[in-house]
Length: 114
Length: 113
Image (tube, rainbow over all chains, first blue to last red; front, side, top):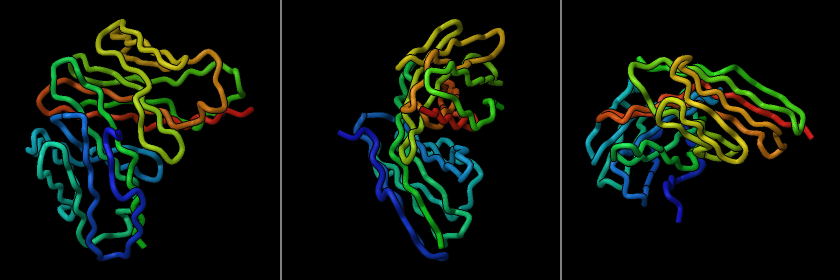
């Protein structure tokens, strides 16, 4: 019954590796997001997709690439991982209907690059 | 651009104390305002929201009122519990085509028994 689910919950990997984080929502929402939370808990949006179309692409390295195979999924691929990529990554979704603005978040993926 | 400013933490209170976490925003227009809570090791959960001026959001004993004149959305609770220990985020969003939640920096609350 999880509304927004991310996998894996924890990811430990070496520098230079390529990894993916998956996100799925079963809420029927049109818009999905990826946020990065740093060690000081600061949340920064990375990407936003509406109906599989990229609508926000903040200044993130092009090693990060989102992929949306369908409206219910937004995966995050990261190439050539660096130490500074260590953070908690949150997927979220929200409806794109007038008056409905609440975003629902996944549990987060704690990425540790060693 | 849009921004949210929260009072800096950490905030440490004794059980049953009164809580206020200040939040002000800068935005063009009238956004919807939210408070999200993040318990240790978990994701963000919506705590309460207000979508227009003078609306009051409330949940679990927490309240916040959308004040257009002061562009504020301060979070309050009359009597905190140990289980309220978490990080609290103020956020805003516009219902436009490129909607995104803009978050404040978060305030860590610790409630001691």
